Amino acid sequence: MKTLLIYGATGYTGRMAAAHAKTLGLDFEIAGRNRQTLASLAEALAVPFRVFEDDADAAQSLAGIDVLLNFAGPFAQTAEPLMRARLEAGVDYLDITAEINVYRLAERLGAKAAEAGVMLLPGVGWDVVPTDCLTVHVAQRVQEPRSLRVALQVPGSMSRSSAMSVSEIIGAGLLARVDGHLVLTPDAQPRDFDFGEGPVQCAPLSFGDLVTAWHSSGIPNIAMFVHVSGDAFPEGDLSLLPDGPTAEQRDAHRARAMAEVTAADGTVVRSMIETVNGYTYTPLAAVEVARRVLEGERRTGFETPARVFGGGFAETIEGTTITDC
Image (cartoon, rainbow, N blue to C red; front, side):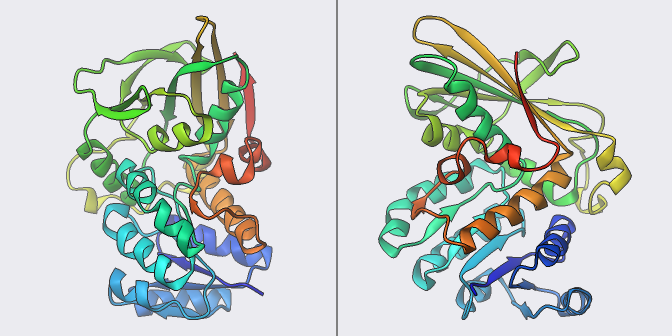
């Protein structure tokens, strides 16, 4: 039986993923940096654990592992050493990041990964699983799709790790895909999108879909937006934030994304995806991806969820629906 390693397993989302992997009966180990917290979680789950001093150590200590699922953000710090080591160790790499520079890195390493027989598949949570599958769905509704606009709705509170990742996303600058190329668009303006309760203003922001949607759909012009409500994007000392929202808070806020495609003939179509809360969706989707990869459902090189598992994959997670608007 092939073995999964969940890295960052003692973090907010990693703990939920490890518990779900145990429920599914997967053969897995957990890993991180804090021996005490790892030992406690490993005992509760009755699984082996590995302690790594740093990301470089983790990259070199993968004997017996077939797939690594990375929950340790911000991913700007962990993804590169782990990805590069995967190429040498022959271990498939998965993570849950929304940070665009991680996708650009995986894209650059794609040819080497293919040569090594390794898959680099970042973004197996929310984002980008729902939006990647939504993009494929809406693109199939027209002939010759030419432009895509994707808007995320971010309700409720944010985890500490996610807030730190948002800082990395903002630091990447405002980007869009224009005629197939990523370009800086510092003058990008907000746009209104309707998530089912009337139009709301959404700000431009550079999520990983600027890379994944291009590979999954081939649409040459792509822009990303986000609508923030409540305290979703916190300010101040992010290290003081709680691990993440409670189960009750997650249940109170479902997640939505809207995709709008314009065809070569000017036809405009829109579709919306709705799921359980993003923090609930992520461990479910990520572990399901890992399960499928362990069973051989994979492609080598840099990949996207929709390319590997099909445009209907997001809807295999309970509570997910796509509506054509």
